Length: 459
Image (cartoon, rainbow, N blue to C red; front, side):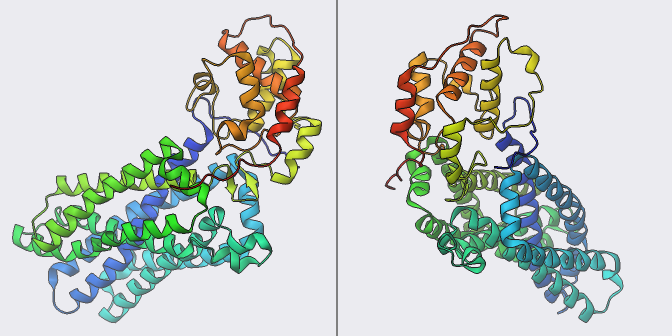
């Protein structure tokens, strides 16, 4: 088992650090994809004599470059940098399996960037034919970038026949590939339409001309009407236990599903009924409010996508602890941190070796999803548990909460982390006795086994 360098983020758990950067990047990237399609369509209209459409295209593209290219590129680099710090083994597995497909995605992304900057720099001086071709190239390459990265990301949740050795393409075109691809495409077009409404309000046009542009741009947001069907398709193809977490098995996940569905419903109702059917005028404040709702829906949706994979980062292959199912048995025998080469940054604060071991066990098996007393803090979660409750629930971790992986350590590791939690609860005194794990702890570990909890039945 490979041990990777350890990174700590204080009171922020690692998942929140990745999620915060990733959500912003996904939002900007999807806006860029939808924006490419919208700009291509608006350019075609401009070349049929619509002067306002031409002004919109040139103005919109500057916003697209400044917001999506600059911030999107920065957050993209930040997301992968952060993910490598936190989940190096997961990223390594993805690269090992899909390196050529990932390289293909980068080729399309590079083409998107080149086409985009070429239009930004030379667009006003190009002929109509060159403009439409360049925008078409930008739209196609941006969507193809989504196509390739979607297959890699959806593979994490639904590897499908890849788990049976069917090969790379079976993993790429996995069961959730098409529902997630079409869902993200609908989101991208919706975001492009909403951003358009904001930008149109900044143009120096009278209200009637603005309203005409808004009515045309709003049509690109109508695919939001398909999102409920695409979401149901996605739920139908994911594993039964993942579906159960989202539909009631995990209250936080159910709440995120509700936020995403509620915000999308509000946006969809306003866009379809108000902007498309009744052709209402929308001012910049209302457009920004809809865009904020869309960001909230995106954030909730990304949390749902991440949460549905639990207890894995790659379904059936790698747990959220970066430990494979096959490695759990060995760690149960020899201990969770016997091979950990990295010292604790604050080792001097622990009064005995058992607490040092407990801190290392926490770092190895817990801190991907928890902190000690910050976000999702274990101290808060176990504050009312007795000593034996702590030992039992840690030893039978996958039975305590089915979306957690099996405890990948021995009885001494269980006792070490129990004593660490008690010591932290006691406000870290300078002296703390060392203890021996009760014999019952090993019995509980054996009863729990080394496999994940049996799948829940989805409602």
